Length: 181
Image 1: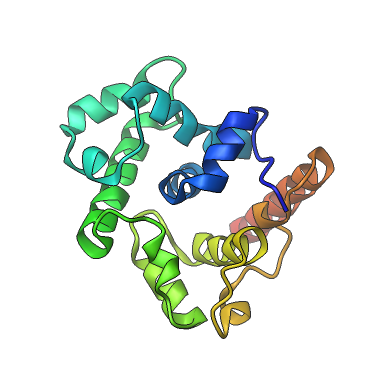
Image 2: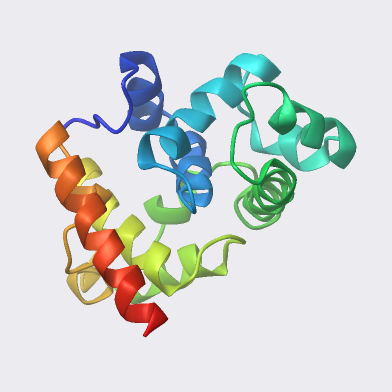
């Protein structure tokens, strides 16, 4: 199932081919439309010249903040998201030698996969479950027991059209409304 999470085919292709872009998009997928969040890695790459965990992790935080704030801002909360993306990239460098794909490539089972993802800054329980579902449905990453760790609700992992995007939004709104009560 191809990724069609933005209006830009090049941004979608980047998410399909660059594991770091996928992780950054997931970090940014908070309090903004999914299209904005998942378009963020492509725009960040355009602004920086390339996406590289080591480069982002070691950038001057104020410089990265400025990159996120450049108009149009990469996120509704550019400063906090710049810090979160930088922390996630630092963890990828420290724990995986800068190779974002090895977060999932080397996981021996679903529990380890979920633990590796959840350890990354910016990933709580819900994002971890969604990313496990994305990896299984979009990238055929299915270590034994992955099903127990994956989102069971309609999420971005299931989006392949404007209709399924609308459905994912509706599910997300309903989950937020339940959490507020």
